[in-house]
Image 1 (tube, helix red, strand yellow):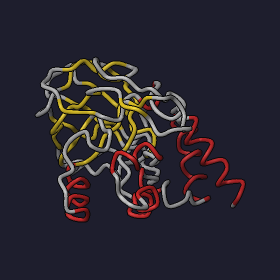
Image 2 (tube, rainbow, N blue to C red):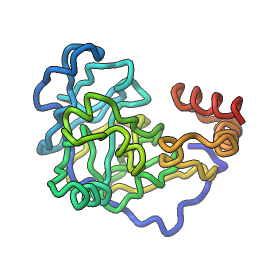
Image 3 (tube, helix red, strand yellow):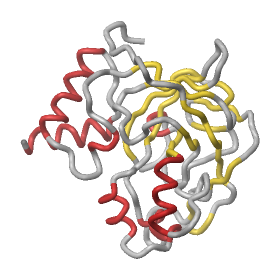
Length: 230
């Protein structure tokens, strides 16, 4: 872990409230990437092994936009799901948004890019790193069946976060989730969907370089494009 980082004081532990993996592959929207989608995630009893490419028993079909080391798992907060539940008048259960990890007590939208979470309560804690925000797509829109879903989801800006696995191991519902490291640049998951602001992106790229951290390629592309525009 980088030596020069923000000490996370007062960031009380949250909880992993559910772990979800693909239930079954479903037909994807026509003329939209692969013919199937693995967005249908449902909670499973633990422990479930979490490795560099995701959870055991899970998969991602469209690897162009999902999966790989930088998007090994997708996390969404109970607090944001509860907000959507009130907004839509329907239950937003774990896995409905295609997430693998449902958290409670962790500010996912407010998490800094590069922030690290320790999951578990013993000395062999799993360690994950926040890499990027989730961008809504047509598959997600069809799953939800809500009019103007992509635009609505983007505007509300409760995107959830993709995570990279730095230290693998088993995870299960009920595990403690603690912010173990925060880079201190202040650029959060919520700073991407509404439109990347050039000065924030400049600060993000500079902080990652100074700390010797690896910025997710997709995030770097967005950041550098915003910097050129600014």
